[in-house]
Amino acid sequence: MEECIISSPLGFTKIMGNELGISSVSILNSEEEVTDVIPVVLEDCVTQLNEYFDGSRKAFDLKLNPTGTEFQLKVWKQLEKIPFGKTLSYLELSKALGDVKAIRAVANANGKNPLWIIVPCHRVIGSDGSLTGYAGGLQRKQWLLEHESPYKQQSLF
Image (tube, rainbow, N blue to C red; front, side, top):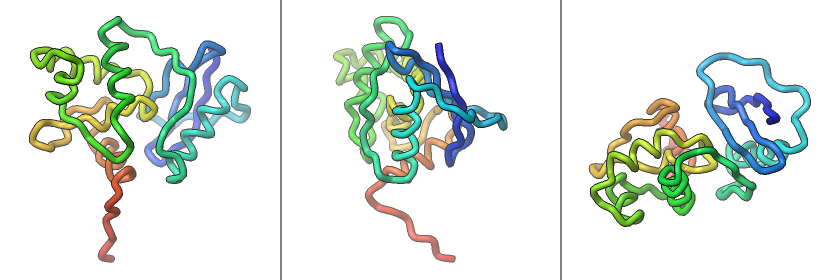
């Protein structure tokens, strides 16, 4: 398994993967040393993440290889269908998966998503529009949603 650390607008990001695909992209809550030489199998992921952050990429085209239960993999696959700049509630996600009663299990699987940003769990919100639970922290979730919003807020100062 290859790994690297890159710097992003939201903090240091750890990427792991091999020739089978990217298995993990996670935001770190500590300062880390940025990797000098990116392993070849991770170069495309680093490039695409940087393009996402600079606003030139709206969809990822990467070979993914996350580890999870059959149910988690199904939820993560459904998350990939949420378009850039759009959100979905946990209830709507449960309905899309065919079981409205599975909302807690869906929320749990969403929270265990190992592919930060690439599998866009940040696009799932509460039914009332609230920013609920996010492993990377609600301030990061808000930043990501604002970054993807077609309606950019203008600073008054």
